[in-house]
Image (cartoon, rainbow, N blue to C red; front, side, top):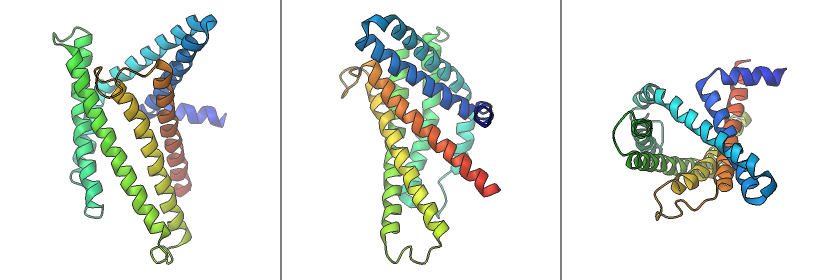
Amino acid sequence: MALLNSLASSLESHRGRDRLIRTLGYCCQLVGGVLVEQCPSRSELGRRLLVVSAQLSHCRTVLRLFDDPAMFVYTKQYGLGTEKEDIFVRWLSVLSNMADQLYYPCEHVAWAADAKVLQVDSAGWWTLSTALWILSLLLGAVRSLWTALKLRKKLRSPTGTSELPRSKRRAMEAKMWSEVLTLLSNLADLANAVHWLPPGVLWAGRFPPWLVGLLGTISSLLSMYQAARASSTAEADSS
């Protein structure tokens, strides 16, 4: 019952619903791709799962039509960051926010072109939105790597953490591992993002469906794990 309540609570939020749809979509693509390629007797089921995956992906695209205001508010609130933050991390975050802010309208135009709402070529807009996503993922990966290395250096320093209370040290360790998981998630998404670029760019178009599903599933599960961990930590702090 507790698990059901937790699931229901998660589905009440946009982010929680998006995480679940994303995970289900990539899992369907992973299983469907494996069945189509490796199990001829189950190929029809595999194709149906791939159709479900495509529909779930389209669902997320439509839902993102309403994400611009939230992204704008976040970007405005972050601004240029605070002076307490590492200056390198601050500027990586600012550039990442700019890439994310531009990503949404580009994707909206591509979606509208595919839906025949706008009479423009959607291919170029999809490529531009994917390029902005790649830029955001690269910046996020560099930021997470930089932060994790700095935390690791502090934790290994005999003078840097000797005076810290155990709770503070555990918080630093948790933050470091969170950044490592974010780095892995970004790299998995980055591999898929390059795959969706026009053919001829690196490994674009070369991944089979099951590999796209595998990388997406890994990224999605890492994201869900971090969200659940953050939620449990917040509940523990408030109790």
